[in-house]
Amino acid sequence: MAGRRSGAQALVESLFSAGVDTVYGVPGEETTALMAALQDSEMDFVLCRHEQAAAFMAGVHGRLTGRPAACLATLGPGATNLVTGVADATLDFVPMIAITGQGGRGRLGRESHQIIDLEALFAPVTKQSRTLLEADAVPGAVAEAVRLARAEKPGAVHLCLPEDVAEAQTALRDVPVPQVMPSPPAPEAIAQALTLLTRAERPILLAGAGVIRAGATAELRAFAEATGIAVVTSFMAGGVLPPEHELTLFTVGQPEGDYVDLSFEAADLIVSAGFDPVEYPAADLSRDGAIPVLHLGAGPAPADAGWHVAGQVVAGLPETLAALTEVLEARRWDMPPAFAGVQSGMRKAFARAYSTSSEGPIAPQDICAEITRQLRAEDTVLSGVGLHKLWIARHVLPRRPGQVIIPNGLAGMGLALPGAVAAARLQQVGRVLAICGDGDVMMNVQDMETAARLGLDLTVMVWEDGGYGLIDAHQQKAGDDSTFGFGSPDWGRLARAFGWSHAPVAGLSELGEILRAGHDSAGPTLVSVPVDYAAGGGLPGVRPAA
Image 1 (cartoon, rainbow, N blue to C red):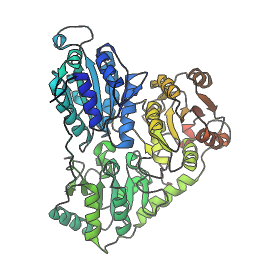
Image 2 (tube, helix red, strand yellow; image 1 turned 45 degrees about the horizontal axis):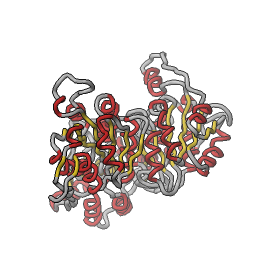
Image 3 (tube, rainbow, N blue to C red; image 1 turned 90 degrees about the horizontal axis):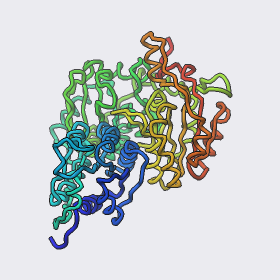
Image 4 (cartoon, one colour; image 1 turned 135 degrees about the vertical axis):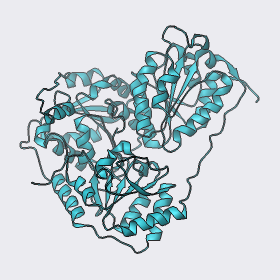
């Protein structure tokens, strides 16, 4: 225990030794000691313009690397601003460390300026929320926070550092983070899974985000190709099979009775690999529990009346898929006609044109088709939240797993623009494209300055419809003609004010050229595109002909 350091230094050094190398944040008076420790460390600190944006950046960092980044805010309003991005990480199972400053311990539990119970505030939206009440507690608390953040299912962990604890001294050194090896599947569980599979005539494989988290894409493809079982992905698992693969049934979308939903109606067994019910209403997939489920995942299946789990293999997902591939040996399923019809219908829908003019507002399917044509394997796409997200999730076809980032569990608006900042910092090759609605982009528009200050190469595309399109669509579906319109800024002036380039799209004929130019240009670019959701049918869903 030689050598002493402050609580703030212990926090920063312990995080770095545990593999957390980046902090996104907004400093405050109560984080002065912590900022000094960061500046004296090897840690990267990214100064943001809003705490919510900082949390979204840390979350995208975690999605892309599989390792937690930290987000930082001061007490009071700084901490409350952080909450949405922290909750987003927890509900999408993204590792993150949220750090908040706090007033001195003598002010806690009293009526005092900017003092609220931050431990209680973050408890419902994190895996653990903890106030560090002494400097000696810091190294162990950091190790446990990183362990929890990374453990399946990953999520955010909150550490609150009072300013007097940040300045207090400790002689304790960093605590190693225990490494947990995935457990092999139990033979009896594999035997049960084998029984369910061999009895099924029309099994379907549902791949969720857990496949990507576990690094099990290769094993999933090998299992599907060895057995012939067709694969549907959740929004967050797009790309585990490339779009041209003979076994892909693409991405399940809204419960609108479209082609992909028809594949579940025809199935007699759902093989759920790494799927979490937060990704999609489970009962809609299983017809309220009528279709049995074989659950494959690192944790047990949830107990849900609409999700009839007939068997489960709780173990490392790569190991489980490899074991099932081996024991099934030569057993192979032909694609049922209903599944083949789904695949054919989806491919035809992706191939057709929807816009009636080369100028003016563009149908969302045509925007997505052009993005897919321009998408290179090294590029990364981030979606915001709104009606545009539903189209992107279904109609932008990723070439690799994790290529298209969809905020899904919390589905909070405002992630795409700041998330693109984190992605561009990490990206060595390829372009980062963030796609926002004109409502979504304004939630964190101030961090356009962060992108410009850092000199990042990225493109933000804004779909313009002058309102909250998803709300309008649901209002109209319910028979209510009221709409919620708003005005937008002059995008060109906005871009120039922040030091960005601006590329307005006048119609479909210009879209491909502008996207290609954005791929090759230096610095941040704002692309504004008029969208005609009505031309695309309103809510997404590739519906069979009547």
